Amino acid sequence: MILQGKRVALPSAPVVHKQFEAHVKATPDAVAVVCAGQRVTYAELDARANRFAHFLAARGHGRGAKVGVCLDYSTDMLVAILGTLKAGAAYVPLDPAYPAARLQLLLGQIPGLALIVASPATAGLVESAAAEVVDPQQLSDQPAGLPTTSPDVAVTGDDVCYAVFTSGSTGTPKLTAVRHEGWFNLMNWLMLEYGLDRGSHNLVVSAFGFDLSQRSLMTPLFCGATQYLMASRNFDALMAYRMLTDHGIRTVHCASSTLYLLVDWETARGGEALTRLDYVLFGGEPLKVERIADWARREGNRCTLLHQYGVAECTDVATSYDLAEYRPGEHDIPPVGRPVHNTEIHILDEGMRGVGEEEYGEVCISGSSVGAGYLNGTGPESEKFTTVTVDGEPRRLYRTGDRGYVTRAGELVVVGRMDAQVKVRGMRIDPTDIERALGRLAGVREAAVVIGHTDAGEVELVAFIVPSEGELAESDVRARLLRTLPRNMVPARCVNIPRLPLSPHGKVDRKALVDACRNEFAVRGTTA
Image (cartoon, rainbow, N blue to C red; front, side, top):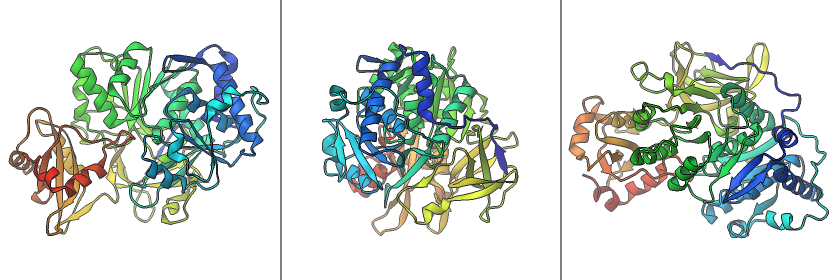
């Protein structure tokens, strides 16, 4: 089964920063970025980025070089990113919200790291790195000898523009590289498909290290709009909602769990900042549609919710679905839609053969979206990148490891991970199926299911539940689950908690929940 995205011609050199430079020429006085009360125009941002690009070129850090960026959200961050791209190099986000020990681990996984851009507030996190650490503000204060014109560097669509770390919660983190063509194709699709333009002002709400944040940072500059940045290292729902209310922001890109928080904030205060947005583009984890259903149906809500699917190895977004088309009775799981431009979705069996309509298989991605592979590994993970023939031509393909199927209407549905199943008392179980069943119970706001162990070392299922109000009795939850689930899928323990912990990327922090399972008091002390 193959879903074919629309074929759209790209420029001979689909290079992201060239699109930004076109807006610099057309509207130099337009506001490019707003942060901490400061407003910077396209011309000013371009001049500063050009200085940084010439600085890199003078050091010999051009095409193929890797530049680490460890900065809080700021104009300096965008200067470093754009300057790195203009020099022909690729940037690597080093999120200052991470612990220093985590950053040191990541730094050791970047081959050919040229230098690191860091401020006085973040330099201490990366100071032991072998690479030179540069403060971008010092470059701005001393512009002598650094031209403000764009450097004459030939960059192609095949060149790497950025690389982000994916997975690695256990074991060695993987550094996956994205090419200019794929990134350009994604933002060009957003612009053409959804009419994003100079008025599509954006607010960044996700952590810098997240793959989703890279397109959130660059898309407004690709379209000629204004980028709004929160002067906060970690996500602040109050600050985010205040900025949505006070500024003419039209788009937000975020993880599903972050969307829930924003919806909760708006619902509790009777606001309408979210409902006035043009688009919220979200995904990154299984959608709990019941968490946003009432808000989405509010009278006068004009916000289009785009439920999207993708992986960091393939330029973040591969498919998109307008949630307004979702009918719960048709599918238990909301679809993630159809492919972006110049992209194909393949559903393959274990023998890499295509399956039929509504048949389950592995979700694979081919086309312009596929990245350049892992930069720090030659192990079995690299074998996920392969080739496939489409319309008689070889196409690069990535095996996602996700399990899904295509509906009769031609929409992709992703049901979970191929390797997510665990054995509990000899039976294979996917915890995601239990989470969906819990989410349908009255009184359950949201839930997450993880694997715990008994004192005897046996595997058991533990459900962490955020109740709508009050606490839920464990016996009642288990009894209601038994009406729809077999006994072996009903969690052994149900823990009431006020909220699910989120990782810096805005997703449910399952490692934190697993750690809670190891703490006898945390589990038994809060169980109803």
